[in-house]
Length: 302
Image: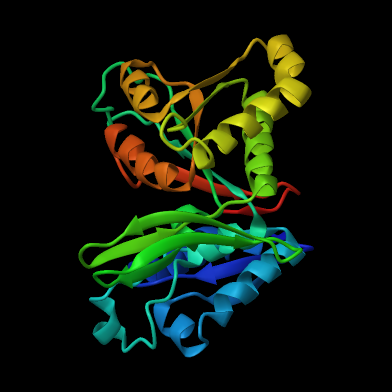
């Protein structure tokens, strides 16, 4: 039997530990006998990332931009315990976070429903797709330990050299601070990706933040979503018979538990990271979850 021919290679991102073995067996048993597989290979195992000072992760993301499709295996994001185990130069950042930021993509994760794996929540009869914003927040943060007596300030210098300051805290004891950021352009891309995916799949979109507490950071997410929906998608949604719904994140969690599923739950980066694993496990298996990164210009990483 003639093999299926590939005209354009895809980007192959190898991973850590058992994923390397499983991916090789998938290729040997299910792909190579039937497909003339062409890939551009990048080893994102922790050893190679350490040897290249994580340049291999950047190179793989650039290759994905070039070819349009990538397949990535699971990788280790090191903590302090991994430092001596792998003799690391530093605690390298999450390769997923780096790739997501470079592609400015949205991660869509959907549970796979099969007979024999029963959701722990009986009302969940249809899958809940988690749409995770793939840029910024804690995954691109800056952190510092703060000594007793220090004053922490948030300082912004605009393009004309004007400085704006906000006091964070006067530390009467040792403490810690963390700086997060995001971009309006990326939030807009996230919103459009969710709305387009909803139109393609004929599903409602739920979005939630904590805008009552975070009146600038989270509220900006809320505002951008609403502005884009009203200007570009409201009529399309009404014609398709689907809706966009916004609520606070704690209310969203309560509604999700009571729901039947069958919608897209758009989450900020950290919320999506946590909730996708919660949803996958509640559907019966953490492993039975698809994961696709989609960029605004149609680049896919599986």
